[in-house]
Length: 197
Image 1 (spheres, rainbow, N blue to C red):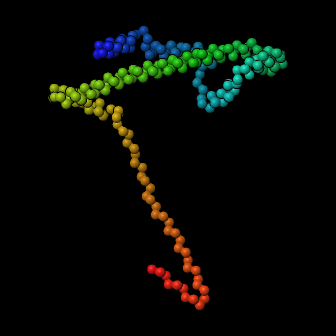
Image 2 (cartoon, one colour; image 1 turned 45 degrees about the vertical axis):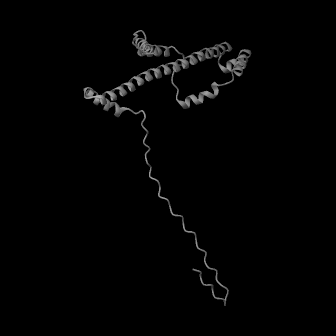
Image 3 (cartoon, helix red, strand yellow; image 1 turned 90 degrees about the vertical axis):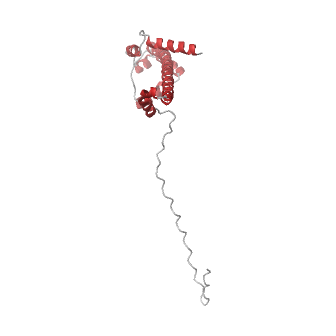
């Protein structure tokens, strides 16, 4: 089991050290690719929202409109595009949609690869921290690790609970006194009853 783990780690290290493909070379290729994509660019959120409603017309509706452009020179002149031009554009949208979907798959794959790499580093650093702590406790011959353990302890955020800032609670307010009813005047000639204590 230990041998398999060591081989796996060695293979990972060899793959990471392969100079044929580097993160920088991939970024360079992606930027070169971006320059070749028609209409490539970044849109602000408001601009993208204004484009979405019209761009999401039903494909059957769009196809019927293309046929209408082909059937009437008047419609074609008004729209300013031929049926063949519109048909080519519609097919191009379908083809570039496949590219978009493949790029999303690639992004997911790269995201997973980065997560696996970070996990591998995390495992190694946590193991290093655990071993260093044990060695420091085992004897003075490992005292040189003390500053490293101290730095790791201060920088380690795993397992720490976030402190919740204690917001001052408003003091409870005493309920407003209820109004006491005024004594009703007693009829003339009869003395008012004495208040009971």
